[in-house]
Length: 465
Image 1 (cartoon, rainbow, N blue to C red):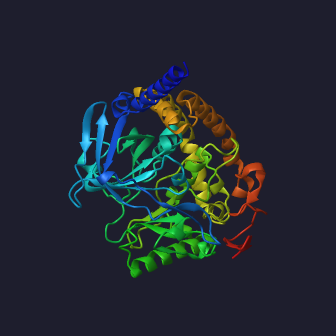
Image 2 (image 1 turned 45 degrees about the horizontal axis):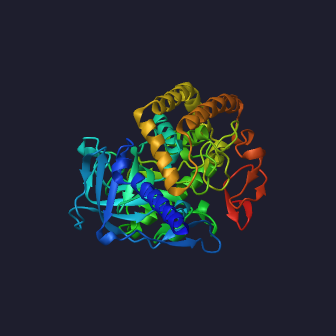
Image 3 (image 1 turned 90 degrees about the horizontal axis):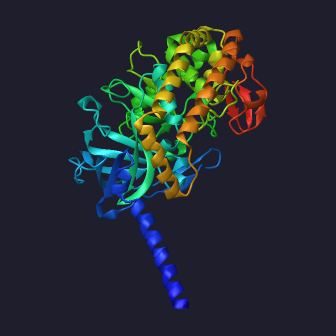
């Protein structure tokens, strides 16, 4: 009897394990309705990395020493193969994949960066202009935040909006979850950020500069505990001393012009206003680690410093509904506090005008976008895929329909609450963007609201420069 019971228990255990394994077979996952990205590495090698914390005096945790693993990528729409990179042959076919991200790389299901050996459009839009070598797999399909954030980016007409598709991903035959397959932030005059190939620049204000091989400081971010600028274009391996000196000097000039009120000569005021308004609409909490890209078309006097696209939407909808983004009033993270309080009111007036001209259209359009999306076949497939993802990683998921209802309600109330604040304020000090009406520096220490001038960090203090 005991042996028989043991046999039955073993059989049940075996059956359960077999069923669980079969559930995540690629044939079953393909039927969920999203595209399926099937990645097979050479010799079954797994992408790995080491983890590192910031050196003393800096901040953050991230990954380093990522191995670039050669692979083949096949993409399916149901059972139909719609793209294949072919087997890996350096410079000819296939791709490499590596772990990407900062704190997001610490989780079990990691984000990845894909580099094709031959340009292609992994979103299969039927137009050669979308072809590129660089793509990302980010974990943002388990929330609508990134989709909504990118729609705001599009509606407010920032220079470029990354395209994406939610997908299910397999790595060497194992289901690894639900992702967004998305375009990378980089120069591509056909379909991404458009800067001159020879004399243009795209740089990032980067909290993780200490993990890069090449970076530079400007006066505003000169503190050892602060940020640096890192390279998106040209690639850090290709940057010359002359190029680094040029963009460093130009951004220093921008910072001084904000200090003395002559900034219109050096920055594209409208793009700066669009970028912060988009984050204010989204209620973004993270003003430190979230990505901030600027671009300059070329090195001519006619080319101004311009804000690029939004990226990183993890902390959207995190402020109180009557508050703006933390970027709005941050005295150290970037220049917006000083633009809003500037004696030159061009930026403030542009921000207000942009809001008043577009607020109704943006709210109606974003509500329509959310409503139409959750009623689409893709949303049904995404919800089913989220459930698979949740079971795979033993984590809770957002119900896409409840999530949509919440964001529509949040945005509607948020728009109504911030509208009178924007239109009755003469400067940012009257528009409290931090929780509880309090201002904190980069290190979480409460500080008094500054009055004039640019401010830099000196240890744990905020001081007038």
